[in-house]
View 1 (cartoon, rainbow, N blue to C red):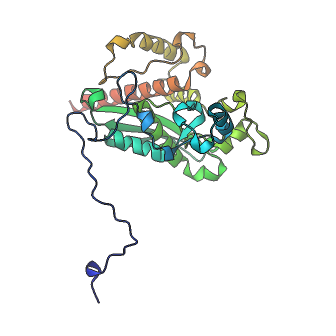
View 2 (view 1 turned 135 degrees about the vertical axis):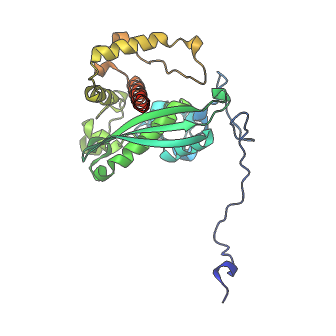
View 3 (view 1 turned 180 degrees about the horizontal axis):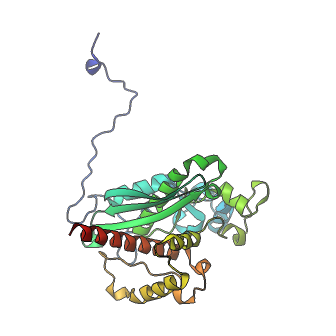
Length: 301
C-alpha cells in the first residue's frame, strides 16, 4: 500500500498554479496589472472592485434599470448612483490586498450585550501616490442590536470589526460606496417604519438615515473623553482644522480630508455629516494616542 506521499493525486482537486505576482519596489504597484486612473492622475480604486462583489441594493434595482434601459445583469455599475450600491466584504479584502499593506490592527472601544465599537488601523505600503512613504489610516465602526438585527446579537463585535475594516479601506482609497455589512436592510426597514418588511421606493424614505448614526458615536466619544469635549469646543476645533486644510499644501504623504459640511454652520451634533463625524473621531483617536505615547515616553525618561 503506497504511503500518503506516494498516493496518486486526485484529478478532481484543483491545485493553483504558481502565479506571477511581483510588486515593483519603486512604484509599489503590481507589475502587469491594468490599473485605471482618474482625471487627477491618481488610481481610481473604485473601478477595481470585482463585479462579483458589487451590486445594486434591492430597493433601487428598478430605478437603476429604468435609468439605463437595461436588465439588471447588464447594468454598467460605474454609472449607477453610489448611494444605490453596496460592496461585499470580499471586495474590500480584494482592494486592501491590491493596494498592499504592512499590518492591520483592531482596537475595541466598547463591548456589551447591546453594542460593540471597534477601531481598525491599517498601515498601507508606500507607492507612487504617497511618494513611496507608507501611510496609516483608521476607521471606527459600531454594531448594535438595532443596526444588525436580533438574529445577530451574539456577533456584534464581528460586525463592528468588519465595518471598521471596510471604512478604513474606503477612507484610504477614497471610495464612497457603503459596505454590505454596514447596513442591515431588515433592521433599517423596521427602524424606518416600513410595514411588513416592505421598504418604500421613494428616495425621501430609502435615502433617509436610520438607527444609530455617526454623529451619535461622535457625541458619545466626546462625552466619554477625559476631559469631556463639549460641542462648542469640538466645533471650534473643526473650524480651525478646516482653515488649515489648504489644498495647495496637501501632499500624498500627509493627505487631508476636507469637510463635506461647514463646521461654522453646525448648531449641534446632528448637523455633522457622517463622513465628517468619522473624520473627527479619527482625529480624537490620533490625539489620544499621541498623548498616551508622550506620557509613556516621559515616564521612562
